[in-house]
Image (tube, rainbow, N blue to C red):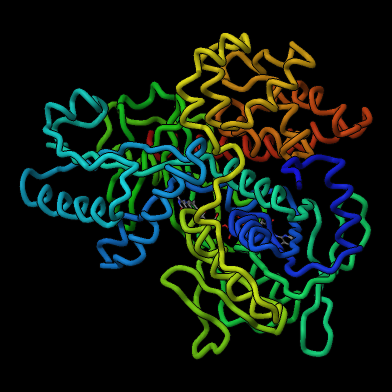
Length: 557
Ligand SMILES: Cc1cc2nc3c(=O)[nH]c(=O)nc-3n(C[C@H](O)[C@H](O)[C@H](O)COP(=O)(O)OP(=O)(O)OC[C@H]3O[C@@H](n4cnc5c(N)ncnc54)[C@H](O)[C@@H]3O)c2cc1C
């Protein structure tokens, strides 16, 4: 059987494999769509490899609003098919595919008017609930009076909010989920290598028969042979099409979305809040003991790998939230800010190669090469299935249908039972029940692998920092099982310390490096370099945040 572990030894074997084997499918890109495509293809019995130039989920897939939702705003556009499809995915994720990672979350839709708005929004939410069909993992929506609102969400201004409707969607740690899909693909035989970049295509006549890639650690070039190459490069799609000299049927533009992170004390509410804004919606989302508030939607043309928030983004978020909140959110409250780039797909006129669904496109610009782009996180499984359905035509052999609808991710099995056994597990492991719950919600049934590490070294049961929920074993596990290769991978994506801790967790970089060094076989120099790399990312972000704070304070004074 194949293993799901991603670590230095596995990477070394993967690199060797990439140059020696003939793959059915080679996936470019380790965002949610790329790992989803790798899982879809591997679980059909195909021989699959995936290369990612940075870290798993280092692109858009770690920078979203982290909602698994049907998209309420599509109802206003009468796009019921799209909403139904996304709601179906939401139910699958919450109940079967990864209940340890995707959790229901309640939202208040505040009403500023007593009758007409309640009827309109109420009808919309009834339709939203009805469109999910007979699967009912999440509660039905509920009308709330002003008195109930005052109890549930004292931070909503009673002078303008006259009632609300509470409805449910779901939320996920996007980077962790993407990683879990990658590990599930590995468990089904996919060869996965990060820090390997696709540089050019290998062609035989008109057909693409593989990719020349660069191992960014050793600097070596690897010729990877594959019958079909599947590109899932998100916002990098245009750049790669040009590099590969392909004429695709679509283009991808970028739209920046910014979120701010605030301490729990900044907003008093037992549920999330959704607000209609002049251009879209603003979400106030509970995130552990913090709040994530966003997002914006502005055109972007800068560095794809390092989108940074500007003061106008943050000011917009504060202004919109402060329309309904009392006390108002203050710039000084902000703990962290992150920006992400949406891949917006536009089909070229009269394109013969593309198939556009409402939000995503699959394309075949050359024999042996297909791609997918656009869509949203929630529907990654459908996008992955669509692109592999197109890819298998190139294989010229009978291939099974996608089975991912029935394929729980690693850690999902037994999760609901384990959650009922928290007390026993806590007693047996010597950990606090809260820590056991935290671990189950990140690793599900793979919690055993964490316990094995603690058994070997009891100090790993200690917390990394008293203010954060992570224990030291999780940091070690990031490199021994989850493919992290740097301090930044651990702080930014295996954990979310980068936006959960004050100062982006820069003061924890040394402790993290100390824990992960032995597994990564680091010299003193390697360790210092990785710490310095993370600190320099933080420095840039703190400078940007400092400038934002000064600019916003000026505007507000
Ligand atoms: C602000 C914001 C909020 C959002 N909120 C939500 C939400 O709440 N719910 C929802 O459903 N959706 C949401 N989305 C959308 C969702 O996040 C994206 O649709 C999804 O993450 C895109 O995934 P992807 O795999 O296509 O792209 P990415 O995650 O960007 O993956 C592409 C990968 O390709 C790699 N790559 C690039 N070039 C190469 C190369 N040469 N070789 C190898 N690899 C390469 C990159 O490093 C990258 O990791 C949001 C998006 C944004 C920006």
